[in-house]
Amino acid sequence: MKQLPIIALDFESADKVNAFLDQFDEPLFVKVGMELFYQTGPKLIKSIKDRGHSIFLDLKLHDIPNTVSKAMEGLAKLDVDLVNVHAAGGKAMMEAAIKGLRQHNKHTKIIAVTQLTSTTETQLHEEQNIQTTIEEAVLNYAKLSQQAGLDGVVCSPLEAELITAQLGKDFMKVTPGIRPEGSAQNDQKRITTPEQAKQLGSTHIVVGRPITQSDDPVKSYQIIKESWLG
Ligand code: C5P
Image (cartoon, rainbow, N blue to C red; front, side, top):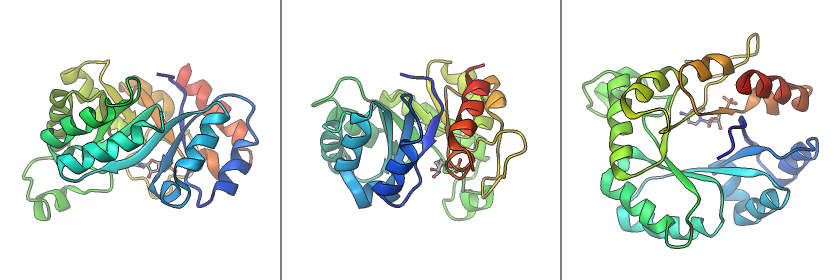
């Protein structure tokens, strides 16, 4: 799987996505999330693939195992590079997700969201009734994902070091919350630079606004790419 920084295409229409992609003349690795997929669906995925880009389809599936398995059978046909589920759906759900995906597809990687980075320790304790630290909860879900046979997890770069130590460096750690030195933090709470993410063991970084909202997206992407690839 390509190590390029994954650009989060958080745009509300296919036109805006196309205008953004028109600026680049090289193959990219992009992330399509719920906002875009619910509006534009498989058609947009096909057109991004036809332009030669790799795709992380970030739909975070979470339902009973049978439903997730069938949904993955459908997503498998889109032939993207990376898909994901919520680890909170449980080991049986994650195993069913893999089974569904592999009906039609041998190469798409599948990872799990551990704890959303928007979850605070207070919420973890008081709402989810999980009486551990965030790090322990994330590590627990990462272990469960590995036992279920997944290829990795989405996590904060600040959790990547611990996950690498416990689960190995090949287990994917796909990390949002990336900000180059001097760029706006926006609503992200726990951020690192691309270089720090690499040092902490991230295998892939996800970067949105520092590129998509930049005055010069191509230049911002090149700077991030160089500092990530080293
Ligand atoms: O613009 P920014 O770089 O903050 O975008 C990060 C992307 O990663 C967004 O699409 C956001 O939804 C996603 N993401 C995240 N934190 C997570 C999971 C996904 O920021 N834990």
